[in-house]
Amino acid sequence: MRDHAKSPNVAKRMFLKRSAGVIGTASLTGLAGCFGSKNGAKGSSKQPGANGKMVMKTASETTSAYSMSQVIASAVSQNSKISVDARPSQGTNRNVSEVINGKTEIAYIQNWTANKIRQNEKPFNNLKYQPHQVFHLYDLAWFLATANNGWKSVKDIKVNSNVSPTPNGSGTAEMLEHALSFVSDDYKRSSVSYGDQASAMSEGRLDVGAATYVNLSTEPGWLQQMKSTVNLRVLNWPKKTVEKLEADPAIVISDIDMSQFDNYAYKPKTLSTPTLAYNFIVREDHDYDTLYSFLETLWTQRKKLQKQTKLLTPMATRDAWVKNAYADFPFHPAAADFYEEKGLWSKEFERGKTNKKSSQ
Image 1 (tube, rainbow, N blue to C red):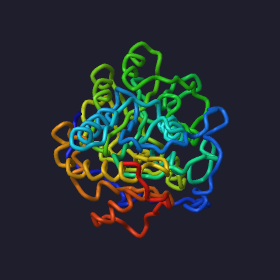
Image 2 (image 1 turned 120 degrees about the vertical axis):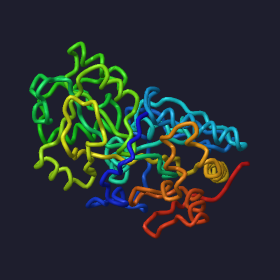
Image 3 (image 1 turned 30 degrees about the horizontal axis):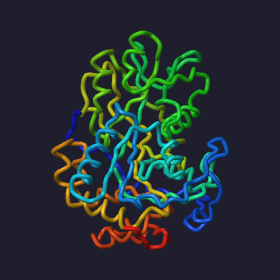
Image 4 (image 1 turned 90 degrees about the vertical axis):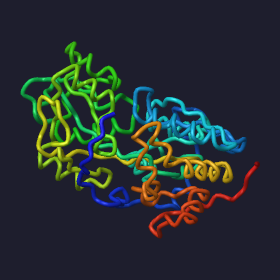
């Protein structure tokens, strides 16, 4: 990973952004049914984490998130009685489904998905169990890039252009597709994994792919590979489109000083692009003691995490754990109690109402 020292211009606590008609904690608690009729599976009644074991999911194997989750899982497993197994994921939408259905104990989502959950929108309407947030992992500034000569803006995308705004099935894809709808709906929707985008561009199979900056300042390895394989060009968003996106309650725009990045065939001076905050969630009935022990162990190891990957350096900072908490989205009681003990709890946060019980 390549880390850049300059700090981007990011509004403090911007992911506490509320939308009109937010349903709030009380309405979330009242959700009932199963996660989408197409999934067919009803939520498991077995209490997640009751056996001291937790499966953790973030994203696919080639991503920074997955490597970060491996380090977190190892740190907790080696320093406590809790066993955490980090596994690859098929996207944040799938993460919600697996947490609700008891197939995964803890997984991350982002504010786009969180907004749909709290608004009771498909496919997250009629959830059998309520998701509770636990802690913040990182922020990702998502943008679109191309190897096509002369292209500088998403306005250059043509009717027959092959565009992969992240692979199908991810919450990020939905957000980028929504953002693109303000410019054009006529492109050809492709689905290419992050690690395969460079070769797809080289072979002419992909006109536009997705890229990201971890914590708005670090380039993941697969993005560096893209730059070394093709003459990668950063596509900016038109000013009028940015204004529309900023007015959208589910979208947060960050302005990034591009002087901190090099080796692009083209880049704007300032990139205004959608940004997502990724926080871990558990099911409302997750075992209290197991989750509290997980957080307590991770907290004691937080300064050592950066020795495994610099991407986890922010976790050494106390406020990073609750940075960009989702508005009107409850914290699990174990997490709420933990943050109160650490002096990190805010009156802006929502506390879940799960019974404090444990099988350990």
